[in-house]
Image (spheres, chains in turn brown, green):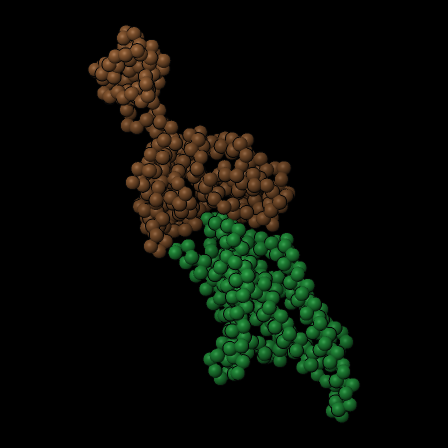
Length: 308
Length: 250
């Protein structure tokens, strides 16, 4: 569990993060979204204890990061935006080193090392010098490094950047499989990635949280409203007025010819009644579907709203 | 302790994985070898000089070969130590591995000490290799062994302090060249600051890093000098710690 409480970070006069609070529970994968320079990396650096906040508190599994940094840091696996690789070491000796500084020792170390190399698909390059590896392999060594101490808290800053589509899918599967009894937070620019693997979303802009929601609620539409797209063919007539007159329709607007957005306050499925009504009026029913919002729309809307 | 050893091992591996260690050792041996040869030749020449033959006793080997040889090594150290220390912290920043180190459950002081000892160890290897030339004088002459040993102790202490300056300079920047120049500058200042006075009668003379070294080559181990070098080292490491710790609070 990660609990961020009223965290603020200032660099001189510049406010990088302004009083943000959120919580990620065990088993959740939190997608951390925001435009460049919004404060994503700064937030992650604070959570991992790389830099202390100007103000506020961070708890990792109920361990206060400021009070007890060494204890709290034991539970963290962190993949920074810029890979922290020693390019003159081999993959295996690098993982050895990381295991050592993270207090993984003895037989445990050997097992952990083998299992993360296998999971990240880097067994075949274990004896190669990291400096000679391709970007995709380096990224995977970076992820292996974050997993070596079997962390309960996993912080990944843009984990799939620089990978090819096949590798991206593999890494996404890997992250998904990791969640389980861990707490995962990942930042990304790819909204589809959030759609595919995250359970919660936090959108941050200019150092403030502008949206925090579970992914289910988010894509189902806001505040339980019940909106439909209705596409019909009709010759003439007061279609809009007729639709508005229905008791369960609170608003109907014609987007293009024959395509309506129907808003309803009823907390039930009105598609059946609506389609019957359309047929009874002799119009041709072409399409009726719930209006879901995709993440791109939501993202752009909250970001630009904030900008105004 | 174990983490200090881990950092130490890793640093040493990095030294010898890159050409740095080999080049440094090679250049050091080449320079000190050339100077040693010149001193020996000079010594041999002056023994043939008829003016000395009237004195009736052999010329002092310590005074004519070993003292200047140690003096030369101390100058070479002034140039080489900034090179061995420049990467210690600066490179961690440049390659973003600082983020790995400082988010791991290890103390900043342990990281510093591990790195410091690694540099000290490389320097120690340098000194050990330089013993080879001195052995020639022991095999073919009979120098005083006392000043030899104390001279090496002096060199070691001088190096230990210089490395502390180097690690401090490296903690200031992410650019290795800048780190090398800064540590060379600091060392040079501490070197020449006492050029006109000795350690006894002025503050500047006392501060000078080289004034405390001369006694060692003459066979004198003064506890005051030892204390000076140890506190100098401690102070350098302490400043580096402050730098690393405060940087993240900015």
